[in-house]
Length: 101
Image (cartoon, rainbow, N blue to C red; front, top):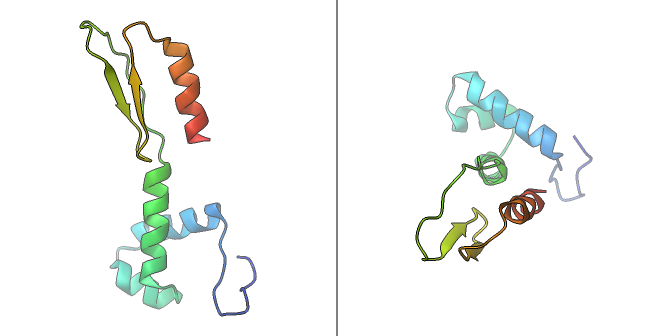
């Protein structure tokens, strides 16, 4: 864990935050109890859990575009990509991988 910022807040790396979430899930106690035992604010744990869920890589599934209607890809970060019938799948894959980086 990194040093505090002088105001009592402690900074954790992404790996440390993910480890804390995994420990909570494996602990068998409620999130509130876990946080009280560890001296972590429940809101902090909730934030870490949200960030981990948002960062989860969605699985790409193959699709066949049969109609002339546009295909819309909705990314978890709110971005919407509208594709025409002749879109290039490799370009879309690279775009989505870039967004996940």
